[in-house]
Amino acid sequence: MFYIESAIPWIGKTGKMLGATVNKIFKQHNIDLTREQFIVLKLLEQNNGIPLLDLVFITESNKTTLSRLIATMEKNNLVEKKTTKDDKRIKKIYLTKFGLNTIKSTTPLVYKIVEKLQEGLTSEEINTTINTIKKIQNNITNLNN
Image 1 (cartoon, rainbow, N blue to C red):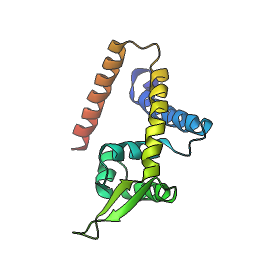
Image 2 (cartoon, rainbow, N blue to C red):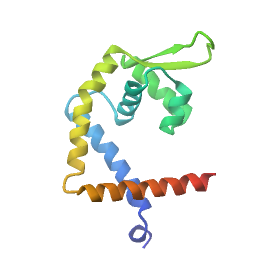
Image 3 (cartoon, rainbow, N blue to C red):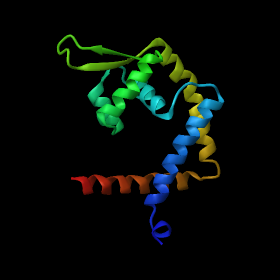
Image 4 (cartoon, rainbow, N blue to C red):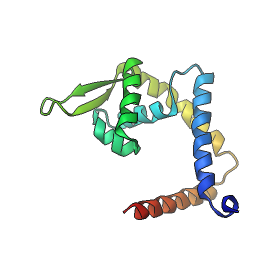
């Protein structure tokens, strides 16, 4: 009865389904991008030149996984890594022109995906879901402290 009485497995399953769906739709539209790469590009669009360690913190990823993701994105000319003049150990991540064009062209598609996924939900249902998930996230934070 754990699955019936708990929202947690449903949240996890929904997250996995969402990631797979976004990746599938990108592939169907011949967009060489993953959901994780889209998230990083979106973060850089909002704050270009984020240090790698800050991206690790923001994305709640581990450094090795994110470093591999950034390396792939560099190879695909989406981002570039630069060291700072003050401290050569600090690597900042910047959007390339191609990366900026990619995020600008894919964002409308992602908005359409979100609209489709929320089809049939009222504003009240969406707000209730958001507030419920925020409470669960707060409980997770409190459990980890």
